[in-house]
Amino acid sequence: MKLFYRTLGEGPPLLVLHGLFGSSDNWQTHARVFAETHTVYLIDQRNHGHSPHAEEMNYDLMAHDLFELVAELGLRDVRIIGHSMGGKTIMRFAQQYGFLIDRMVVADMGMKAYPPHHDQVFQGLFAVDVKHCSSRKGAEERLSAFVSDQGTLQFLLKNLFWKEPGLLDWRFNLEVLFHEQSQLMAALPLERIDSPALFLTGGKSHYVTDFDHAFIRNLIPNVRFETMQNAGHWLHAEDPQAFIQHCLDYFNS
Image (cartoon, rainbow, N blue to C red; front, side):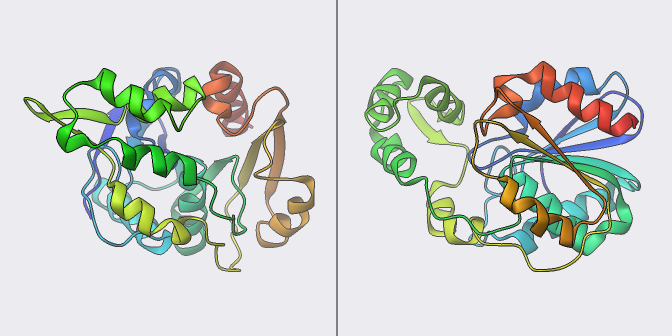
């Protein structure tokens, strides 16, 4: 699959992968800073942003999508940042194509399986009848009945666009994300990763606990763990300056 990406800056290649319901557009503020020392590639994963839609979605497919892009661009020794779902994608990529990686940052995501926990979000997204919704305000009012957190609400609404005059639509493939969520929550294979990795987690998040560290270290021997104590799962959005500094310090170490 030919993924959509945005690029800026000069220097070593740095790939950035968003999480579920996200897109490359969410990372443009970070990219401007990274671009001072890197050639940054902001990537839309399949069924998100401007990348193609497909009926299947799992980490083998998403890792191969990324490999095809890296091969097309002729990149090697890449640095990669992946948040949440993007974190699992880059770990699977590292299991299969680790020879292409210089080092990677996994942002608040483990290798284990997670129980489905987006039911309320999916209910809200399906409640927005985009084919008969004539305004973004109406969509926001409908979605806000299910999603009360303003940050999450605005994050989701960034995916809403005018497909044609008078017709709204979601940039992500809502039906496939819903039907394939068990694949997106699944554990990664128990395969070793030799690429150097930083696991950067939010102190207020429970996605990666101290209990997970030994399991991760067993499969990724060259791993470092750091915590942003005042951030949650959306650590890159809650404290972008600190997030960027953690990444740059690691890449430069």
